[in-house]
Length: 401
Image 1: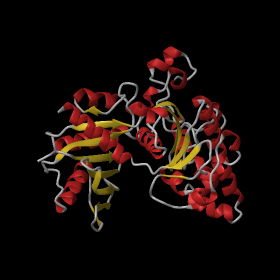
Image 2: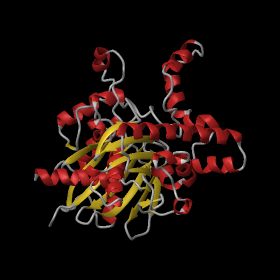
Image 3: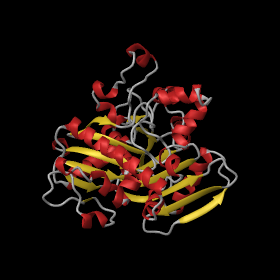
Image 4: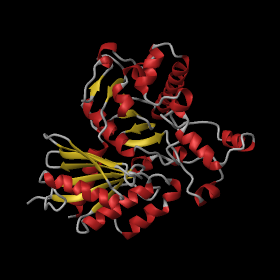
């Protein structure tokens, strides 16, 4: 029996998102989410392809119990983790630093390096490690493959990756720009080239991953040359709860004048800033509803969001020199037509324009929303990070067989 299935795990601090895929035809067999792990009442939602969703609530005290619950649900559909068709388990790992530039089979040295990077990813890498170790215990015979959010951005030149601070200090504390959402940027840039009927190495793309977390990237010939997130996911675009770019001296000002601690400022910038800090909402649908109703705070929040987005589009146009396409993806990018329209409004001189009718259409497929004669294509490309992780995982284990 051929081993063509890959289980993809995205382990958060209190959740596990998963998908099971068969790579023979890139078919999704099942997907689901375990959330509120460790709380009094946890919840699991499981959806087999072509079947009805199942949901239950109960006690899931830790990630070990969560993965055992996932395995039990998969087994009900004849897709259990003991299947001889399972080739590998692919894990999303947020931070791989400079060391990990491609998907990697996990061994003790890899685990140690992911653990060493916890100080630069304290919210994510510990949960990713827990997921890997739990999966290893359940299936010690299977390859466990780590796919890193940062890997796609390791092709950035030093001129883009370095901060302009003392080099010795930066190197001693691993302070540089790493970037995140890499699996999404990789997938979307490649799918955009396919949509244009061209090879990825022939296409320059600006990818705009706009969700509650948001990032932009400049991709030249399939390789990232710049991205908006930096040492952490805080830098860059205005996000749902994160500030994005700002004068770093604001931190010192809040410490000295506001009497705030480092932890309080960390919470402010990561959880109480961005859209929610500006207007009290981080759901773009609600913000647009408020804008249409004449709410001035919502209007200002929207305008600040768009202003930052335009700045990055212009900056990355300059970085690339030639742009073949701008691709919108993720929850806001795929679904918020007013954001796409506003982001390119006034950029006609750069060849960017959307067709109002095409932009208004809602669809689950990759599509162009620019006029047929547009100098630069504007696209909506649904992201599929799980498929990208599965594809990279399967390619690696096949190569090493």
